[in-house]
Length: 219
Image 1 (cartoon, rainbow, N blue to C red):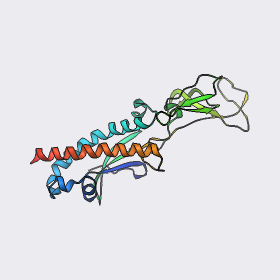
Image 2 (image 1 turned 135 degrees about the vertical axis):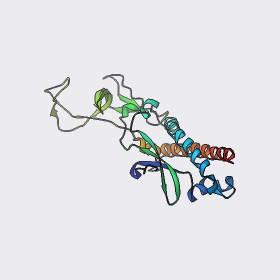
Image 3 (image 1 turned 180 degrees about the horizontal axis):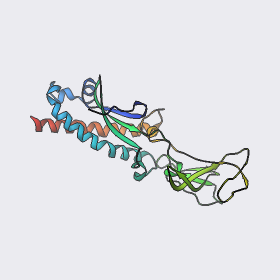
Image 4 (image 1 turned 90 degrees about the vertical axis):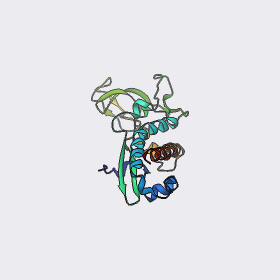
């Protein structure tokens, strides 16, 4: 039985059979209007689609955002699931809603004399975050440099680190978009819409071709 997807984090849904799939992919034409006879071909094509979905998502995200393959490959970023509802069977791409550290988007800092740390959230658009700096932090149990900014306002006594015991403004780590925000298209921003369209175009082209191929093999 296909695993039920988490709808709250389902960033993209691609139908593989049923009424929705017919209208999206022209399956009735390929199947000579006898889609039910293609059950075996659909299952094989869907299995191939599931294997292809993860790499397709990673490629599309990296085309539009300054994030690395290794970052996107971390556990919990994306998950591909199969499901079924009245419209038909579908493949759902689950995406984490946790925003990524800004440092994951090519974060750089030239030191205290620089205007601030820089990052490239959208591919080719590096931005300077005035007053921000990079320092080792701790996230998900692993130490790595993060981009921080100071929160203007009331100072507090530092409990640890280089300035322990001194009155300093608190700091917070800056973050970029989440995997969900990068692929869902929610909000209508250009980069996530481009990413979503690229993913759907690749999956659609692969699925229709693979279904046609599998049907020829099964006849």
